[in-house]
Length: 432
Image (cartoon, rainbow, N blue to C red; front, top):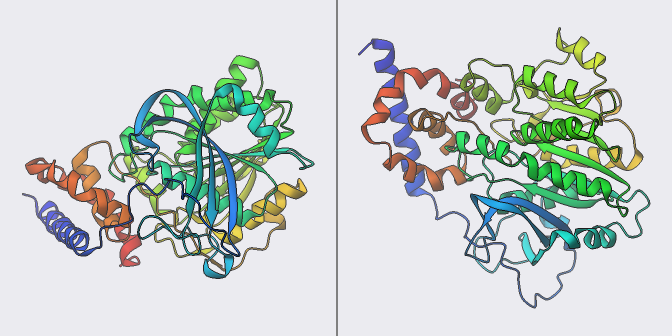
């Protein structure tokens, strides 16, 4: 074996051992079934409630507290869901507080209050009730990123809606993600699988007389799904529906060339686009290596050419979060921090563009979304996941199962994945 590969193998082996030890020493993780509604919960002073409509291309789960799995369903399913959020005095903005045991405690935990299936024909009745009394009749659609279970997407969106303070009707579109850092390839294909579903949802909302305007917020891999769905709509209908006025692309894990094509195909009458970038996003650094050094849209330097001229020419607003501090070791979830979503809520409420020119963000932003990337090959995925498992409890939950399925094949991939593992490892070690 070449010396370089031998060193890489020893380093990764040590990391694997550390990850397994952390996994063995960790507690059992959060309980399964957190979305089972709490029956007859007494009101708790200071709690807040977020009522949302959830549209999903996931397969239904047998567990009522899980609702939907990471597998692919046969059609889009709709759910009327309500989430209770603990009092602001007991929660740091930008965070989701998971129950340690079931049932959760509304005084300290995010808990579900309602989860009722809704027929597509009844969606207009839901929007009519949700926008009642709101002048703009504004709907916010959130499309989550890679490595999200159904409950991850639900609670994260509830946090974003609450912390933003935006007067919107919240609609979550959640696609089949297996909620594992090792399932990058499956998740990527699931976004392609879900393009028609998201396009249908957006078209239905645009045609709904109850709805005045629609904003789409997408994160990470969800940006690929969003851009593809809007591109399809523009090709079918000759333009994106006029009610879809704002599209916010947060840390997009999208090839720059493919993004250019989507912008072009959406045409001149496309929605106002805002790009949230961060040059220190370690998850996108890994993704770039996975895709053969393909520049990721969310990691560009908007002040460097050719990007600066392109963004100006395309009239795309930019929110550059590179210099903003974050407690997220991978710097991939800054968009969900309290200060950022509060900014988004204010700008959306005022109908103003979201850009670097008129914002004042505090130096410290707190985030808990620790997305990451891996390769389709299981061995390479493990090389990436090992250091991530040190900081991400959810990864520790799934890491052991994947590790046991690899066997001796992992050794053959070590040399080719050593560089790939370095980006998240730097996030853990602080660049050492």
